[in-house]
Amino acid sequence: MIWQKRLIVLLVPGLLATALDRFSKIWAVNTLKEQPMQSYLNDIFRLVYAENTGAFLSLGSGMNDTLRYWVLAVVPVLVLLYIFYHVLTAHNLHVVQQAAFGFILGGGLSNIYDRIMEGKVVDFMNMGFGTLRTGIFNVADMSIMLGLFLMISFPFSKTTS
Image (tube, rainbow, N blue to C red):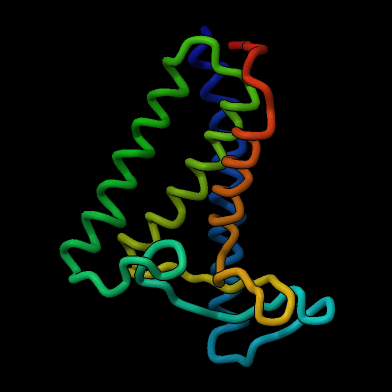
């Protein structure tokens, strides 16, 4: 059946992203917490421990707890459930799109798990040149960005189940 093939294509990158994120956050807590920032590659890449109670770039961290729970946990869960449903039921969805959605789901679920279970997300990577730097991010964020990159980088005219 088509949905079974799609489920595999969705789950492989999703589970890989979730596992890598979980392990990397455990590593960050055990290795980087309460340690000074570490700089690599002429300060292009930094390891710096941070706990984020908000979303991307700490957006929403100032919300009251109830609103933050709904906006940063419940709504994203509903969006991820819709994506899961969409991948299994959409017609003419390219296999690259299916895998891309898997990366998005895996990263999203891992960060949502942290928000619900811990009330925060562990971030620990930063990149840039001089004062031009990214926010502090984690493997789940990279997985989501990889999924988005795959979605916009591949033509969707060729379809497979």
